[in-house]
Amino acid sequence: TRCFNIKFMIGCLLSCLLPFHQTIMPLNNTKHLLVSAYMDQRVKDFDIRIIGIFRRDSIQPLHCFFCCTGYLSKTTPATILQHPDNFGFPFVTTDVMCQIPQNCNATHVTLLTTPDKESPSTDQWLPIRNKDTVGQKEENMQFDFTVCISNLFGDYNNVLQFAQTLEMYKLLGVNRVVIYNTSCGPELNRLLQSYSDEGFVEMVPWPIDKHLNPSRGWLHSEHGGDLHYFGQLTTLNECIYRSMERSRYVLLNDIDEIIMPYQHDDLMSLMNTLQNQHPNVGVFLIENHIFPKKHFEPSGRFHLPQWNGVPGINILEHIYRRTPILENATRFHSMFVGSFMSVALQGSLTLEQLNVDKRLWDFQENLIPNGTKC
Ligand SMILES: *[C@@H]1O[C@H](CO)[C@@H](O)[C@H](O)[C@H]1NC(C)=O
Ligand SMILES: *[C@@H]1O[C@H](CO)[C@@H](O)[C@H](O)[C@H]1NC(C)=O
Ligand SMILES: *[C@@H]1O[C@H](CO)[C@@H](O)[C@H](O)[C@H]1NC(C)=O
Ligand SMILES: *[C@@H]1O[C@H](CO)[C@@H](O)[C@H](O)[C@H]1NC(C)=O
Ligand SMILES: *[C@@H]1O[C@H](CO)[C@@H](O)[C@H](O)[C@H]1NC(C)=O
Image (cartoon, rainbow, N blue to C red; front, side, top):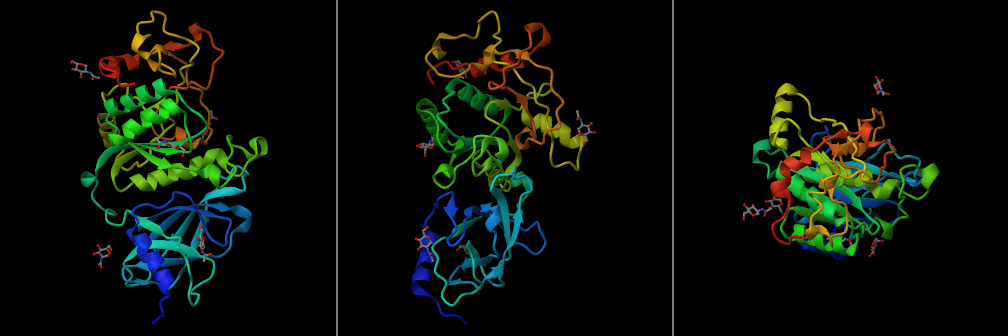
């Protein structure tokens, strides 16, 4: 039997009571950051997956330490799995796999740099998520579709496009949109607050800039910084685990992308068809199409007065679609479904080289607000 360190025990009990922990936690005595912990028993011999951001040149052996109901466990060895795509940055998304000791009803976990020290002291507990939902049947899940939007940062304030896109997601059958927020512009902040109050949007604080010098680019040799694109690969992975026990499908795309079925009315009928055709497939890749923002639909019928004061792009006004570029880039977020409404990329093509695509207009009645939502 072991002696309990009282201070330690209180820390553990307190954090068991606290409903909320910071999303990014520097791990004591290391250069690493911990994000969250999920029950994940799909891999033999492991129960817990801790998602973190590790400094690649300083990885040391670590030990999993659990807060069980009623007592603190012995440590078990941690298995550290760095993700292969680091793009040359010093920090990389990392999964740490842990085994829960026998007879421990674990509620919280943390990592230590030394095994089973006499009286380890820590207040760095991560609550273990998905504990009560793991392994539940697909039909009991809370949501059909969750969209994961990575990293909002800078003073991004494209309110009109954001609102139209969120409404479009609703019309297509999306139940939840998870957004990782480092910062955003004032009007967009208000809009997100209201969608979050109504429960459609789940805002996850992502103050990565408080801990690292995150890069705005994707390649270290070109853009410098500590971490690829504000930690996009970490947040998208986090979102997959956050969603996997409560949502039948998870869609990874940017906020300027809409996954648009063309032969079905909504995502569920599309997925029913696809799953029938491919019963053993778990991941679908969707082709990207770009709508350059410099070309406007000529009649101006969707240039509506009620949107004049709203900052951002009106996606109903952009109907010219580029033919897809067959590129083989492994952009993580081009995975899954998407008709790509890019505003960032400006094509140099003339109108004649673009295809007219008014698919969005099929949803106009429900997309144009009667009142004053914006
Ligand atoms: C494990 O702990 C949870 C929360 O503290 C509790 O609800 C549950 O009944 C416990 N399970 C067992 C088997 O003790
Ligand atoms: C760990 O770090 C926290 C702050 O993040 C500090 O309050 C605590 O005392 C540290 N614990 C140890 C054992 O270093
Ligand atoms: C987004 O993050 C910023 C910076 O922490 C915060 O001020 C703002 O309230 C957040 N917005 C929402 C809608 O959560
Ligand atoms: C994309 O990758 C596949 C498989 O690696 C290859 O067969 C194909 O030729 C590539 N396409 C292009 C356009 O490079
Ligand atoms: C607009 O008003 C009509 C009739 O009052 C209603 O049926 C429709 O749902 C409303 N649309 C929105 C987007 O609120």
